[in-house]
Length: 521
Image (cartoon, rainbow, N blue to C red; front, side):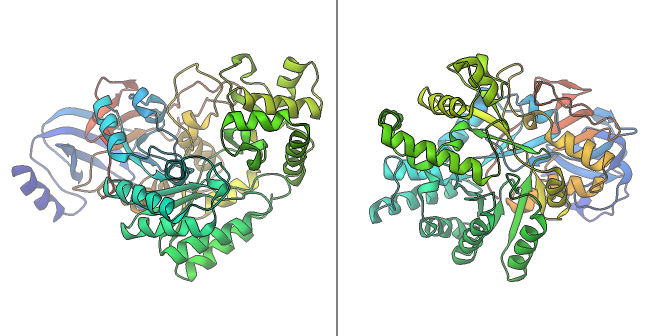
């Protein structure tokens, strides 16, 4: 009760104040960037019982005092697009903390745990360093609701079951629903199916986050579908990792942003996110036509064993390749192939040469088909343009998101974004290239995500807010993780607090585990 009284009293006070109560943490001498986009101000931050209780001129006794002289004090970053369904296996999540991320949203691109309550229970039992929210993935719902991967619409009963799964997920605290419309089975879904499920999400004020159906020259067809879902379902919409893939699509950023701005002017509530790299990462199966992947892996193997069906699959692969303006798969690198880890880090031509003795296009295709047959693998795809990335980043409704996941040092050759995304934005695009300002970059990583995904009390340094805090030196921020050598933590982040508890202290991981499941407010 005493704390509530103090919080209420503090909320009536101006930015500059004196606070005499005992504090758990006192951060002094900082350059406060509060997450709203407002200009940075010198001051201190007082924390008590996991909440910010004072901001400005703060004096009083504290169990822990942190001198932030020469550093920025900001809200902990919120990564709205991660793939962290197995985060309980890596509860320290150090790669996220080391780039200032204190809250992650998983369940993106249509892939999630369908039992959200069970997922949250596992998160809480695992003992997390950070906060974990989730979307309910349409593709996962479709698999459960239809009993497999089918190129057809669900029956009335199947659709009802799918809607029930989404409804329960929203009741259990999911922040919305995601789609991955370039991935099987999401790619098999018609727009009408997605609209019906998005209507359920809208009833709970959730967000519809979509990896749209095309990011190539056909992107405007995909945007038509994206905005149709938002309009007909009356749902807020988030365009996942906005990008233009392949040389034939490069340079259309102005047209894409104008399209989205027009939709917003017509009343749609649309935001987007991106990562600070010109390479993506996903399954190597994306080089193979969806029709070849319907059903089980045995079904796929049977198609390869049929000369006519295999020839049609190869024809489809060549069409996908040529449509993007490429002559071979040299833009793709093997990130993880469990069956043969010696291929990790090699381009597809290099891997084909190693396995088949030739790097011809024919052998590259045979290698990709075989990788999928032997369990599948993931890759890094160098398919975007720096100028496009920069233009998308400038838009005020573009959030910063890694599209990564929890990492173990030395395991596989993953995309460096899981280690360095936020640091790369702050170092390369804020400090060096000056594409956006520091306060604006922090807003895109904090209050904008919190508002979009309805994470009440997060994303700002204000009295009463949850005390997720990051302290960093903007002159020392660096992302040493590279495509060839990804396993390096970001640099420049000295302190990270989650719910008022230090998890990175003086640059070192602590034993504290104050995070856990975060349900939509």
